[in-house]
Length: 435
Ligand code: GAL
Image (cartoon, rainbow, N blue to C red):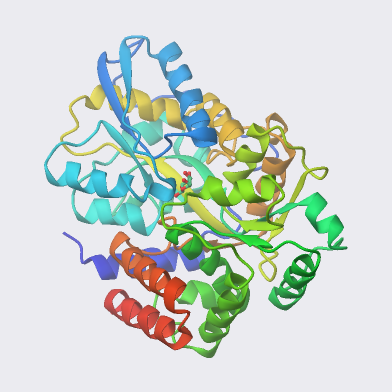
């Protein structure tokens, strides 16, 4: 078994060095003829295929439903079993999954994040390589090499990527901004804080919306990225940037200021609660991954007229990255059916159906951008041209254990607002994992 901290550093280095601009291309590439060693049965292997995710409700479920419908159509011999556990970012799901894996009761496939989180499952020897599936799908001719690198250890590829999400997006209510006299996108944190003040002065008591702890970590990572810049931010994960540096202290201070403009959240509040505050005009801004765009669409809201989006001020030109992928767990009861699922998830048709509904962009490079709504088209452009940084909250940058420590520190800060203690907690967590 690999040493986890070494593996994490190795992955972080891949993250820091490797993933710049490996995105979707405007020119669809040809898919090779599909020669592969993967033995498949027309119509599917048969039997139940239990798929574990946290896409249990709302717009996220619609993405999964789109995949399920295609799976039933293309693999009629199989019975799809939806094992979704509710709770954004997998807060509840990951605990249930850990105990199921521990008890040798794995689902046939589960959702995992590309990067450090996947490495946890690889290190624990809980998942099998799926190189045959990736090859059958077209391998490097359809998936960006640098994305595959994040799923690979010692030449073995451990999951099939379904999508790429952007984390550093501000979603804003157009009418609320107009009332506050705001008609330009703020260039940096300072300008954004000035705008938050204007919104407050216009009579909105909570200009910024937040929900439970994981959404606060999500907000905090975007402030870190804004205040450190992409290189120093990426350095947080390989030990080259100190978590008690001046820049991190500035980010903690800005984060505290942002929270002073936010609603009081309870930890049970999930992301839709915060995004809905913007949709309903109770807040001007919410920082959320681009799964939020599916929520606006679901509520019938129109881009520009009703809502707008822009990179978190200070992070323009950087794509704060995360990707979902699906695995083949060791000891899965129906590995043949699981591979049918993986083939569907990784197919061009599956990626189009899923990502149009989910707000994300395809991991594959041969799905035409014109098949997507304007937001996703803009995200594809950004992913192609921007520098890439890895999300902390969504498994790209840090292991599950490190993330648990960061969540504890941010949760404590939400109550105490003690800046020095947060810096100390973050630095001591980092020292455990960067060695
Ligand atoms: C992320 C996941 C996204 C979305 C989000 C909110 O961790 O990668 O696909 O589901 O959580 O639940």
